[in-house]
Image 1 (cartoon, rainbow, N blue to C red):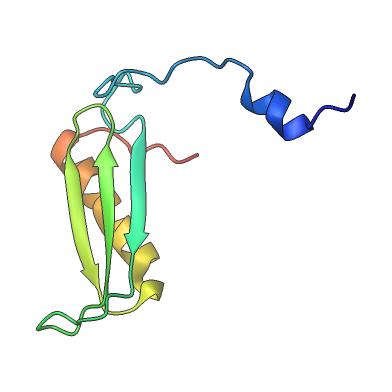
Image 2: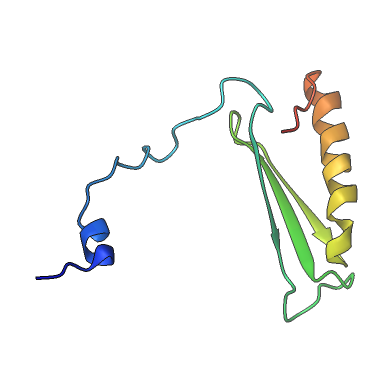
Length: 95
């Protein structure tokens, strides 16, 4: 009798997910989630097709930047870093 490895793996137990809303960071800007979305089928009035989000895990502070080109992400990342550093007085730690 042979066993399917995928079937055996699928029946193994795993640790449960963390509860929704549980904070993983212990300080402001300790963990920032980011995501880029696009291209959108319909452009905005300003010709933007993409957007990038930055979310501080500790405070749940969210910033959204609209982009014309995906290559603008680094520029907006630096803009976000300057904004939150000035607002909070804390350095933005990069991994």
